[in-house]
Image (cartoon, rainbow, N blue to C red; front, side, top):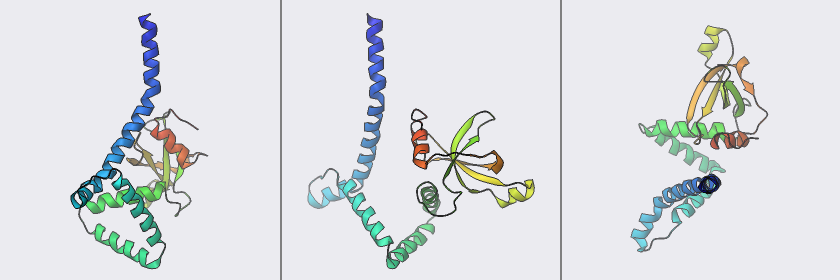
Length: 194
């Protein structure tokens, strides 16, 4: 009897676990985004307005998107990036995040960029899903007399982090899969597959 109750409890727990993790992640993200402005607004008005940070992020994102479509806006964004690039530590972090955003989400640049692929990594017979991000270093191409491809291998469950490996192009298996499907597999730890 207790064995059966234990199995039922464990089954229920595993059904509930993804929902609990999703709620936890969303709560952490909400608290982080909301915390950006909550204290400032509370100091100014004397009231705490839940959700003000989220609303502000949406408004700022919309305004930046609107501004970036005009020449003056593009110049202001370029000037802001030049200032950021002069700040030690911040420039490295910003450049890395910007490049990752361009590689994974923006749809411009070389065709080889953002292609989903699989490579035998970390050893033969084990495949890792990654994103071909461009041609490998020219120095390596000269020395080995072969073509190479840079492949970004994202971490589970946070695909914005990961590492880059350089693979002979002949060993890169390009997959007929969208970036969204690949990210779904990566974020879920392989429990959701196409």
